[in-house]
Image (tube, rainbow over all chains, first blue to last red; front, side):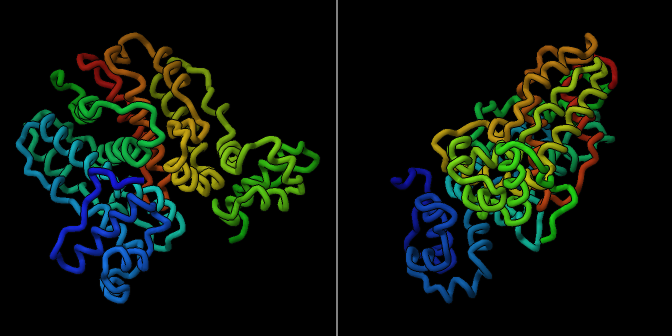
Length: 198
Length: 198
C-alpha cells in the first residue's frame, strides 16, 4: 500500500533512537507486524542491527515504544470541568490508540502477549498507562459530581475497554461511536446516585 | 502443555462436524492458533481434509465456529429483575469468551481480521452477537429503571468492551474485576438521571 498521509516520515538529522523508531512505525504501516523485524528496521533506518539490539531487547519492546510513545497528550492538566476533562482525555486516548502504526501493531502485540511469560495490563503493554491522569481528573472535579463510592479503577477499566474496542478492533467494529456518547456514559457511572442530573 | 481440564474432549460416535470442531478446540488449546490448520485438524480428528473444506471455506471459519458456538447461554429469558438479568447475561458472556479454546483463538482471530477484506463487528467475529438479547433484558425491566434516552447499542458496546478487555486480554490484565462491579456500572449508565437510587 502507499504510505498513508498520517504515517510519520523519518525526520532528517535525528538520533539513532528516533531513526529506528520512525522506521519501525513506517514498516508497521507499510508491511505489517510480522514483517517488522529488527533486521528490517536496520535496513530501513540505516541503523546497524547491533545498535538497535543495544537499545531494545527484542523487536517487541522496539515496536511497543515506536507505536505508543505519547503519554504527554494524556498528561493534560485537569480544568475542574469534569465533562470537558473527560472529553479531552478520551479524545487523546483514542488518538494515541488510533494512529496507523498503533493499529497495525496492536493485534500482533496482544497475540504475542498471550504467549509472553511477562504478562502486563493492556495499557502497560501499549505504554499508555493513564490511570494516574484519570484519577487526577476525578480529583479535580467539583465536590458532589463524583460518587466517592465508585472505584476509579473500575471506571478506568470500563473506559479502557471502550477505547480498545473502538480503536484496536476498529477494522471489525460496525459503527463509529461519537466520543460524546462515551463521555456521557462515563459521567453517568461517576455521578452520585442522589446527585443532580448531569 | 497438558490438556486443561476445561478443554472439551472429543466425544465418541459423533458426526463429522462435531469431530472436526472438537479437534479444532483441542488443537487451539494444545498447540495454539497458528498451528491449528485444516491439515492438523484432519489428522487430529480423523476427518479427511476434503470433508472439512466442504463444510468450512477456511480454517478461520472453522476456528470461529469451534471456539464460539454457544449463543444459547446468552439467550436466557429475562426475568424483569434488571440487576439479576444483567448479572446472568454478563456471566454468560464472560463464560463464552473465557473458554480455553476461545482464549487461545481470540488474539489470532483479531489479528486476522485486521487484514481481512470482510470486516465484521467483534461480537460477530466471535459469533456472540447478543445485542438482541441485551435489548430484551432492557425491555423486560420495570418502567422507570431504564432511561429511554440511553441508546442500548451504546451501552452494549461499553459492556462488550469491558467483557473483551476482561477475557480476551485477560493474560495481560492486572486484576480480575468482580462481575458485580461491572453490573453496577451498567446499572448506573442505564438508570434515569432523575430516578431513585439503584
